[in-house]
Image 1 (spheres, rainbow, N blue to C red):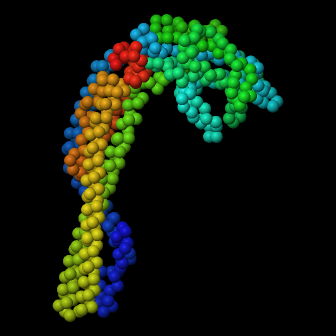
Image 2: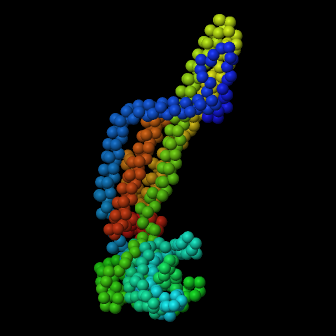
Length: 461
């Protein structure tokens, strides 16, 4: 466009009419874009027709690969270790339910001017390694890593009694030291609720402590917290007595009543399927960008070739007109046609340079796309093996995960590579969904590096 806009409309001599109308600057740029778009559309239509049969072959191959992976998963599902029996083989692994009870509070500060506070209890697990801002202008606090569970609100009561229980289901190779149970006493009010104080209880300590109710002084709330909070806790490990343990814990909190408690499920960010997609996403995005820009430069190359041909035709046309003017002795017209001939010659050279530039870029982009595709094929199996173990790593050896960009760029090869990336995304989603469903059923494959040495044999590490 810069080259076109730099060109100027040439003034023609008055005594001889110019067979072409005088065009404003850059008008030919619009013509080039329209012509190039039409050309690209015809090329795409031809490619679509020529690829129809090859796409059917690719689809059948991908479906066969998907069926093989699905069959492998169903065959090996029974070999994924169940967490129910992990406790005996892996003492460090925490699998079970922590029952937490907000029993009562006393001596809470008065948060309203004309009445007592309207307190409720809020329970969640936080990770003290990370901070987050929980409101637009809120102070940064520890990152919440569980669902937030709340009790009913006791209206106008600075000494509330809730007797509500919450369940935190845990399936972790080991509980991080940074995990803390955060129990907040909140004041229910119009707008943003305010804190009346909190209690921070390390998860590891709770899992190792005896069941029962303990009283803790409330802290926080800008050092204005007053009073205490009574919290019941009981750890129920997976095993034969698990159901009886949970039932008795709920009964203890509710004073003899058996109820259904709110539940928060935690995997301690150690389930291997949670990390399968993240290492692969940057590579797939980079390959798609290379494909996009290669297509863009291919369209530019087509426009440049068409414009080069147009200006060469015009150059020949004005050369013929100049010869005719010379024959009839029209020297003014001859000079004018020679000037137009030189103009179109320069334009043809300029568009030739644009085409060469686009062609060089296509080659460089496609070479990079091919290199990244090979790296992605290798990275997928390596990542799956490192995260989830050799069994899952084998699932990434199928034909759907063998990506090839082809030696040379074409619209067909670009469409094929795009299709291969889509197939990879679908297969990875299937594997992640399968591992997630197995985890929810109690068959777990934790991240390999999170498995303690004492548990490595149980998880096939």
